[in-house]
Each structure stands twice: as C-alpha cells, then as structure tokens.
Image (cartoon, rainbow, N blue to C red):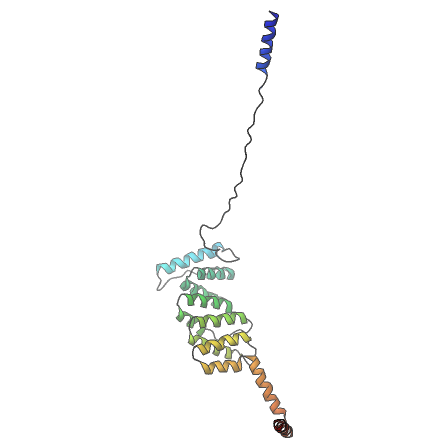
Length: 252
C-alpha cells in the first residue's frame, strides 16, 4: 500500500508540473514603401510648390478659356502676389496653355513694368513650339527698348525668335537694340552679336548683318577705331618716311 501511495504522489507531481511555454520565433521583413507621383509628370514648378491661390487662379483661367475660347472672360488676378503670378504663368506654359499664359503675361507686364528678358524668352519658346508666330511678332512689337544688363536673356530672346523663323521680329530686335544705344552707349556681348548676325544672314539680310558686325561686334569695332586713330595722328612727314621704308623693304 505504501508503494501504491508513492506512485500516486509521483503521478500527481508530474501532472501538476507546469509545461514550459514554447514561443515561436517570427521573422518580420521590412518592405520600404515610397510615395511618389501617380504618373511620369514632373513637379508643378521646379523648385517651388504652387500656392492655393495660384492653383485656384489656374483652374479659373482654364475654365474661362474652355467656356469661350474666342472671347474668354478671365477672372481678376489682382489678389495674387508677383511670385504667384510668375508661378502660375510658368505652370501654364508647362501645360501648353499658351493663350491663357499670354493673358497672365500681359498682366505681369502691366503691373510690373521692369523688363524681364528671361520671362519673355520663356514665352517666345512656348509660342514657337505651338506655332504661334503672330503672337511672337506682337510681343516683339511691344519691345521698344532692350535692357543691356541681361545679356543671357537677350541671347535667349534672339535665339527663340530666330528658331521660330520670324524674320520681321529679328529685324525689330536690331532696331530696338539701336534705340537702346547698343554700339554707342553700352557694349553688347560678343556671343549676342554673333547669334544675331548669323540669324540675319540666314534670313537673307546680309547688309543688316554686316551693320551688326560693325556696330555690335566690339572686337571689329575697336580695331577699326584704333586704325582710324593711328591715321589721324600720323603727320605727312611720318607718312613719307613710312612709304620710303616700305619701298626699301620691297627692293630687297
């Protein structure tokens, strides 16, 4: 009986002993999730996010253009700051909305009359890509004078007009440069003169191209002025000595 009691106690001891809790290791794999644009379109404006006001203005302008493309009734943009106007204009150009962009560009010109040749070059480039040569001529007609402080913008304007195949606008740029004192009051960059001269010759304006070379290309102009200055300062006796020396050198 004692042995039976001992075996029962051993059974109870093993049955009451808690079973160890087995934990199953789980390996978690981290999958990176990247958020990006839903299409291949780039950012709205490079280096700048459009403000809510600019976005609303773009939507209203495009809606007015779509409603009546021949005579659209555009909303007022007086509440927009200059930065928002510029951002809206560049976004419209990026979307190819040149008709609406022309309206915004005219507002910028009216409210901020300081000349921006770089912005004008952007307009000419977009208009040329969309075959709107008449609008390019109209913009150049409004260009009475040219600011000589932005040579990069000026070269882009000239290249854009020539690339659009507008002979009349290229000639008008030459006239505007003359009125602004190019060749007399301020120097034009050598590269600008070469681009303009090459474009004029491509349009068959050889006389005007030669005039640009004389007045705008300062290397040629300075050499011509230096030669005339030397001629004016040589006395008749000095001229005779030069001729005598030349004859002696030719005799040998």
